[in-house]
Amino acid sequence: MGKEVIPAGQSATIAILFIIGTSLFMGVAGQSGNSSWISIIIAVVLAVPLMLVYARLHTLFPGKGLYDMLLSIFGGVFGRLACCLYIWYSLHLGCMVLRNFGEFSKTVALTSTPMLAPMLIIGLLCVWVVNAGIEVLGRSAKFLLLFCIAVTFLVQILSVPKYDYHHMLPLLERGWGAVWTDVIGTFTFPFAEIVIMTGAFGAFPNKGSARRVLLSSLLIAGVIIIAVSLRNLLVLGPDIVSSLYFPSYVAVGRINIGDFLTRIEGSSAIVFVTALFVKVSLCLYVASCGVAKVFKLESYRSVVLQLGLIMVYMAEFIYRDITEMQYFGYHIYKIYALPFQVILPAVLWISAEIVAARKRKRTAAEG
Amino acid sequence: MVIYTVLLYAVVALLDPYGLLKRGKKRDFFVCAALYLISFSLAFALAMQWDIPSPSPPIVHFVKQLL
Image (cartoon, rainbow over all chains, first blue to last red):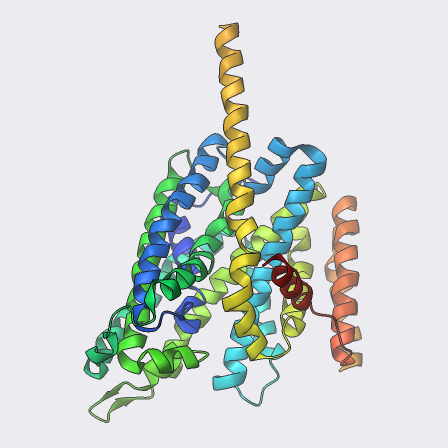
């Protein structure tokens, strides 16, 4: 089978849907109350250097994915160990996203249906698309992003009559401390989660594309998340937003246009399902590629079904309840995810720069 | 539920790991079979409604220790 290549545009759409995936419905860390939008802006700015590091890795290792980079820099043993860490992280992230969807359907949509059923359906859909290849995921994402943006924009416009601008004041009510706490939370979830995308760098077309893809997707996803967070804040107010598990769902439920267009939150939930489908699929793809690299398999497709099923089952028992999910997502995850998102890529980048500099010196000496 | 799980997994075994063996992908077959066993064990435990230890508490404990 030939090498898979996804054009830059499609990679960007995957990245955008990956970033906005859960945040659209779960919201972002909200300790800073009505100043949460400031923390999102700061988190986007802080994520820019990280994106440049990821893009630089792509330039240093053109045509190679994260696992190839780890193996070529850290060697067989340590490289495989690092690969296993990333396999775990992508599998775990996929589980967490699936569980968010499971809790969402259990809490608001399909209250009498066992949580496993909707998670299994989405999980099998992800297995299908990953088996079909990352190119299929790219093409699906391109269409789905347009749909997501259209729905989000429409809902945004329809929410305007419900805006109460008093919710914005007083600015920085809880101080800069709460804002910085939120910055770390928002930085790790969702912006720096894009580290998973480095696992698919092997399918990127050329040297310069990663920087363009990552920066543009960060910017677009950042704008969407800020717009949605502001809408939730203006419609519901900071206290209600921080007390809800799915603030967007409630905010959209408040839309009432002339007693005619009401209760459209169910329709807007499609956006959530669409975005999480892309996010889980990418996590599954990266985990499968990792297993294939570590065990030197002929194709990552050999393990997609089993890894997908494990992901779905793990999502079922990963948390006891929605409270534990919320606690893990907003308090523990920001510390747990940092080594995968910042520390390991930074070590990899510095090591790769040293290796590249030595190679350049050797070539110059020979020349 | 348990019977359905076992029957479903019998079909999955024929399609997935055995299919790889038939195509001569030995290494892929072994890895897939190992993952199949893990996946089947989890599905069986869930069907039996056994308590499966979650990975979250150790992570929470570790992060709390770290801070």
